[in-house]
Structures are given as C-alpha cells and as structure tokens.
Amino acid sequence: MRGELLPPHLPGSRSRSEQFDDWVMESAQRLERLWGERIQDLQIVVQEIPDGLEDMTPETLRGLLGSCSPAAPGRPAVITIYRHPVLMAAKALMPVNELIHDVVVEQTAELMGLAPEAVDPAYGRSQA
Image (cartoon, rainbow, N blue to C red; front, top):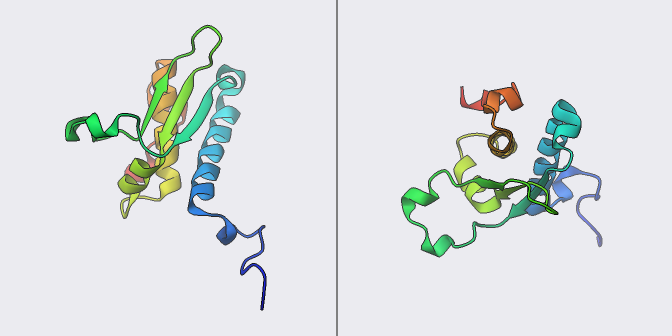
C-alpha cells in the first residue's frame, strides 16, 4: 500500500511542530474573541528556544516560556512563545495546549498592564 497513513484532514497527520503552532493560533483566536480590536495588532510568534540561551543562568531560564515586547513606532507589540521550554515544562504536568494558552495570557496581561485572570477568566484552570 502506498500513500499517506493518515489523510491530511485528521489531527494525527500534523507534525508536532504544526500542532504546537495550531495551539498558539487557537489561543490567539480565543483572546481576540474576548478583547476584539484592543489586541488586534498584537503579533504572536513561535521560536524554538530563547535567543542567548547559552549565556543564561539556571535562575534566568526558570519560567522562561515566553516573552513580550511592547509596540513601538512602526512595529506592533510582539509575544514570543518558546516551543522547547514550553514542551519541557508541560511534560507530565499539564496538557501542552493549556500551558500555551496560559503563557499567551500571561504575556498579553503584561503588555496590557492587567492581571492574567482579567485577560482571560479561564487562566490557570489546569493549575488548580
């Protein structure tokens, strides 16, 4: 038998990297439904690991699952989610998609100057 084992429309046909990107997109869409135009210009990107990883101390690395930078003239606010640290942190503790959403909410809250629970009332539900 030749051909794909799983048809492209089934979830199992997506690579782990593509599935991670899908979860980031789902999180962004949820926040856009909650906040509308207020976060419309927010850009969310996925990076494998943080820049300068080799220069970081273990204390710096702890909790570094994402980062954000505020908008500047000619540049939107950017949230970066670090794929490998998120995957390692989620391992056996919680579903990856829930940790991704929590990280996106935390970074959005930092940019907006709000508590994460104010950005999304479902924040942290898996940590309870």
